[in-house]
Length: 289
Image (cartoon, rainbow, N blue to C red; front, top):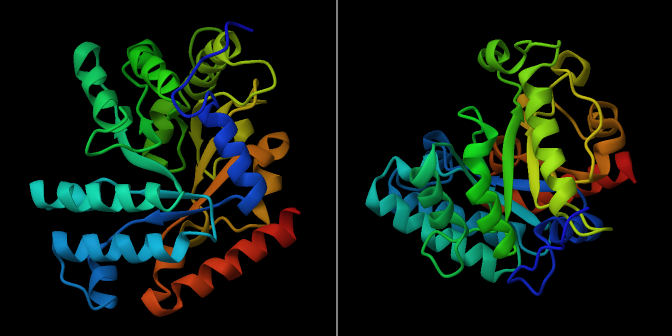
């Protein structure tokens, strides 16, 4: 492997921070998704202020119960500058509570534009600072290189969309390239080759993947992921996958999966959310312990 990467977070890679969080709390990641109907059900205004209050309540319920939360940026962005201000407060509160925060921003572009996205979400001290962001590689994995480097220098992470479970993505992601490899498989191979060059021996890589919990790995052309790296697995709970499916779906990579749930938990409401999280954490442990 290549030279160890020195990050600002105590010289521990983001991947190793995730490994520690999963070992301590288990795989559950709580999504922070202030859907309009959830705001109404929680008795909150459908506004930036409502989204802020919603997010802060989710953070309070998640802190000490799980290691990771994932705010969905779009549900704040729709309120414009006020929504971004609300998101800034939620991100800061979550990080202050000791949670690893993944900004589900799905940014992807070329050159200086992508660099600016990375700087917005991954630079220490910026208003939108998170611990990791999701990124879209479909303009070419190489367009994300500067973002990968920025993340590693700062002790941050990036989750690259590789195999999502929405049916509309199948045409592009399952397309077969010359030689018979799927697009999803090529993305995983390119990023994994880079991780092998840059990750310290014995550590988890900081550039991970988004692989949906309802994705059939064989159908997507996926095999193993090496070196080990965090895998963000949306699709648990409301979208159909259950804790018992984690090992079966992800196989040898199951121990590195961040099982993301949002609506299935959030629909419990503000009073019962903490209990719903506790129950789900126990279910993951009993099914995958």
